[in-house]
Length: 106
Image 1 (cartoon, rainbow, N blue to C red):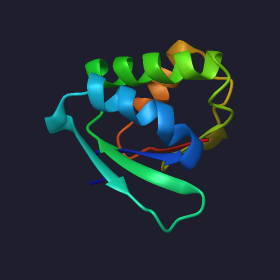
Image 2 (image 1 turned 135 degrees about the horizontal axis):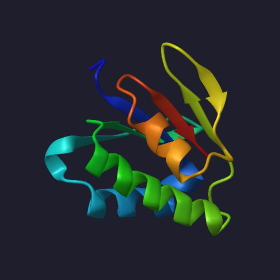
Image 3 (image 1 turned 180 degrees about the horizontal axis):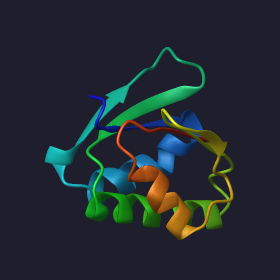
Image 4 (image 1 turned 90 degrees about the horizontal axis):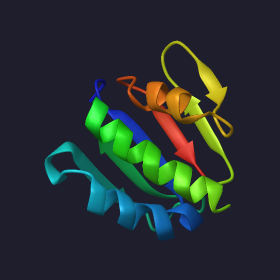
């Protein structure tokens, strides 16, 4: 699973972003896990990074961020940990396209 992107969505973000990601991403490239007991992180997504998948994810994330529904994006990988809340389209694409990365969206 180290070559996969892990995306964790808060309860609030899951309500609107999860349906978009399910509709946009090919079923064979993503797995969804729900945790009803976790007070902060409701869904975890494991995704195979790639240009097409990352482009689709970036589009959905940026739209909801512009609408004020996404407030924080925290990124970590083996090399770096960063606040990506204000990352532009290109920066976010590069972050999501990193195998083994973890992105927390709230």
